[in-house]
Length: 409
Ligand SMILES: C[S@@+](CC[C@H](N)C(=O)[O-])C[C@H]1O[C@@H](n2cnc3c(N)ncnc32)[C@H](O)[C@@H]1O
Image (cartoon, rainbow, N blue to C red; front, side, top):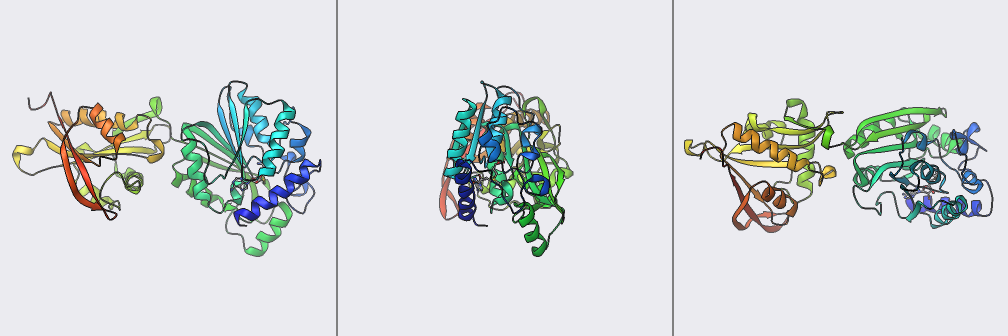
């Protein structure tokens, strides 16, 4: 179903709920017969009648979100607000829960329910789950109940969830999934019976999309069985953590796919290099020194979140200790000290290996990289003006260099 049709459909249901009707999302009457609602919950005490009547979920994401006092939560497609209100009780007065919905009528219903519940730590936002109106790294948990299946751009939804989560943040949603491909006739029959099936993913597709977005620790657990290979499921994943859970270690062959994916993600920003396509693993390893390749890894999951590597600038003996390096951090994990940790470790390893000068070229627009390198002892030697053409634009490159004070003195 196209986005506008989805919004129209749920706006109609919201208006019915505002008049006091119990609303359902399919042709059955309640969850036990197939259709979704409050029957998917263990405990709804304290939630106003209006929010219970409007519940259109397919499970209980709050039950698995492991919410703690003071945390910030985002509910994607918050509808009448049931999961926002349940979460608000868990995070307490020092926490905050955002409900996001594309339907103004649903928002009106949710705000009325929140007022009735006396909830002061909640805020309902108008917008889409494909373009979340919150800054990056601003929430501890993303929850959602039977909404992601409705989106016609699920990679964007998962990318947005990843973006807004803090490192180590949790993704815990209830959704509808299928065991495998479901033929259109059975899919349509299941849609009539339980709703929320038309755009549902297979479990494997869901896992692949979560992985591509950068999530780790992925688990998809079937809950209710709706027949025809259709299930409600609890989907959980985590954004890689840093700090105590971060390890810098030598790059291994098994890291190849993740290293190249991070490389490509960096190139896609347009600020990392003149290159536009990451090389093959053979191409990557060919020019780079084997003993100076490092990755930053999430120790719990072994997911690579960044890498650094280098090549010699010349084969002439006089330059034996002069290298040119690259450092790339997964775009979803930037601004959390990973680049600094990687580069610090890399410099130390280089000095251990007898490297006295590290060179690099940085686009002047890449201020984050410039600042990082300057903080770690690199200086700008000069600007190579309009030295290369990138996506049709002639661009300058700052030449930077770090001269060791302990090697080759
Ligand atoms: C099946 S209802 C679930 C509502 C709520 N999560 C619950 O459990 O009761 C889907 C909700 O998601 C909203 N929605 C659907 N697609 C959306 C999108 N792309 N962006 C934001 N909200 C969306 C609809 O307006 C509706 O309120």
